[in-house]
Picture 1 (cartoon, rainbow, N blue to C red):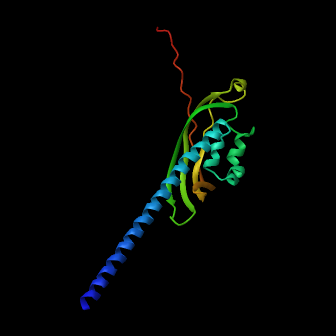
Picture 2 (cartoon, rainbow, N blue to C red):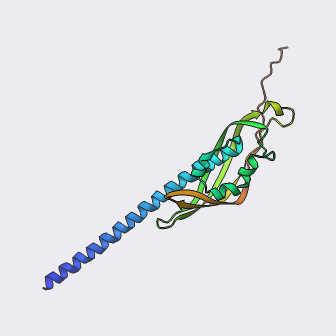
Picture 3 (cartoon, rainbow, N blue to C red):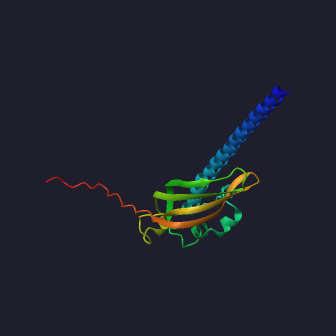
Length: 187
C-alpha cells in the first residue's frame, strides 16, 4: 500500500507538471499567433491608408483592416477627398512606407490589443497634374508621420484597427529637386 501511494503521488506530480507545460506552450502559441496577425493588420492596413490618402483612390479593402467607426472619423482620410488635401494637385505614382512597431501586446484570451508604432513616409514620387502646373509647386509636399498608440479589436475572428491616437508628429524633410544636366559649350 505504501508503494502504491508513493507511485500515485509521483504520477500526480508528473501529470500536474505536464499540464502546466502544455498550458504554457498553448498560451505562448496563441500569443504569438495574435501578435503576428496584429502585426500584419498594422503594416498592411496603415500602408493602404497612406495609399488612399496620397492617391485618393477609393479602397473598399480598408474595411478589412479598420472598423467602420474609425474610417468615418479619421480626419486624414476625410481630408484626402477634399480640396484641403495637400496632395490634390499631384498624381502620386509611388511612395515608401516605413512602420516601426515599438511595442505590441495581445493576450491570447483578450479580444483587444494595444501597440505603439512609428509611421513614416520618407519619399513620395509623382508629378503635378497638367491642369495645375501653374498653380502649385512642383515639389510634392512631405508626409507628416508620427508616433501613434493604436488599439485593435478582434471582430468575428479578425483583428481590426479601432483607434489611433497620435503622440508626436514627425515631419519628413522636404525632398530637394534633382538638378537636370545642362550642356555647356566647351571654351
